[in-house]
Image (cartoon, rainbow, N blue to C red; front, side):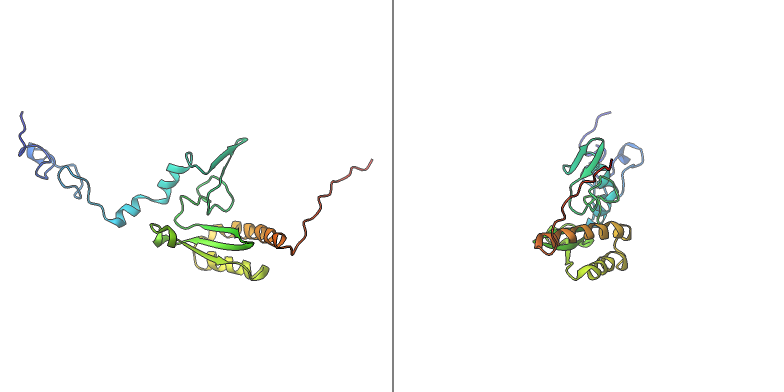
Length: 183
């Protein structure tokens, strides 16, 4: 059977109907061109799970030592290479970092994922022990952001606030004592 331009399947947009079989292509395809996809559909295709599957073994932030896997990416509270704590594969992620001797809580803004400059919300934590903990609880738990990360965020804030106090000179570094074995 010979095909000319007008009887070739897909040339007129039928994709196979011209040679007697039903079309197997989705309705969004036009002829031999590319599918028509809206921005909302494209965002759904790039889900957090798909991003995790693509980056879990090949991330540039991945560190493998002595049988353990760690990740150095931002928004990873425990620096573990797992789906729950991944900062790359989560559209909602929490990070607590120290900048200029100040501890800040940073969250991702899900709606601004394509605008990196506006995709983060930073909140300074300088209200003391109770105030900082309450700010973290309010931003993570009460706003229904990521309740599963509350405990890890509070633990990291506790460690970083101590480091910030030592850097400012409020606290002195403790001398390391070695235990002596009594004979």
